[in-house]
Amino acid sequence: MRARWLAGASVLFACSAPLKLPELDQEAPYVDPMDLPATAGLPELLTLSTGERVETERDWLEARRPEIARTVEHYVYGTAPGAPPELRAVLLEEGPAEDGLAWREQIRLHLGEGVSMDVLIVSPVGVENAPCFLGLNFCGNHATTDDPRVLLSESWMPDSRGGEGGRANDAQRGMKAERWAYDQAIARGWAVATIYHGDIDPDTWTTEGGIRGPRAKSAPAVPGPNSWGTLRAWAWGLSRALDHLTLNPRIDGSRVVVHGHSRNGKTALVAGAYDERFAGVISNHSGCGGAALSRPARGETVERIVRVLGYWFTEDFWAFADREDHLPLDQHFLLALIAPRPLLVCSAIKDRWADPLGEYQAVEAAAPAWELLGAGEFGPEGFPETGQLIGTLPAYHVREGVHSVLPEDWTLWLDWADRLVR
Ligand code: GCU
Image: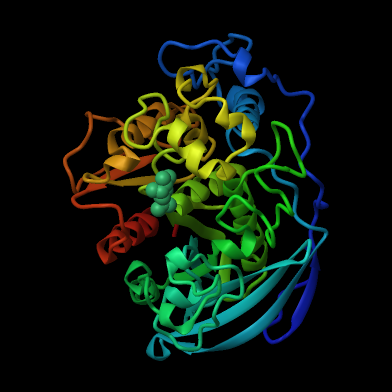
């Protein structure tokens, strides 16, 4: 990055890596999913594909981690291009928020391919370089707050999320405000940044208007095992937001926690796994294709998710429907890519669809990566009682109740982040 972000101006800044189409890394060990053997139990985290044991930090960083990163993208999420050569940031609007305790900025980032995303940033007044929570939202930035100055999203908005004829509208304002505790974050000196995920890539089988281009289920423009699914595209968008946050003087780009609920929680994990600049990761009720192991096939299964929501993934993942035991990985691989940085996986006990036990077991199975790196111990005593935060690095929490985001979840996240990221 060369140019500094200047409030009030449209700034063009150059990124280090050029935008290129995803392509298959020929070096990577790659086997057609239908030719992969079934494995008994979970694939080994600390054994190289050559069969050698991973003993040292160096073995992990130089050999096993890259191998895992490639395996997870080949078979689950697909690869993403680098940052675009230029990322233009335009300050659309700014002003006081949260009764004068915060400052609101609305910044349009032009991502290339005619696609842009609007980032809403609410930061504490009088704090330079605030740590920041960054996460995607489901229904538009305007739905995360009652603040009437927040701009309506201009991207396609499904009617099932309150859109009308595919467009955002005033009736959606604040409809998800209870899920976004701006007040708590600001009171504790944290900024909050959010983006409507549909700005980056539409949440549907057709990709018109999204960064993945005009790919439809029936006619993928970039066919093949490494084409990126929507989760990877959303994660890529979060990295572009981080590109901006690192230049924004109100935010400390080295203390950005990426978080998300459900599909956005899956995305937060992918973003944290593939972009080591994220200082911490929180996944809330992310379930299948997120923190939950695929093998137990409890709650949502690979078969169900690829049938209904297959565009979230690379097409190779579809081949594991009802064949989870052939996966050369499981979701603990994704989690381990985040080590040694702080990771918090949250479940709700009645959220059977997201399989709380499978989420716990994935954290437990990923924990040896943190231990190997000397970052912390999980020290599990088995699936915990509700309301107990267990482990330091990584950490796991299950609460009472159902699939949602509550103000008390934000309290837990902020406590955790104050301890481990601040
Ligand atoms: C569906 C989907 C889940 C997803 C959830 C959500 O239930 O099957 O995988 O996590 O939507 O994002 O709310």
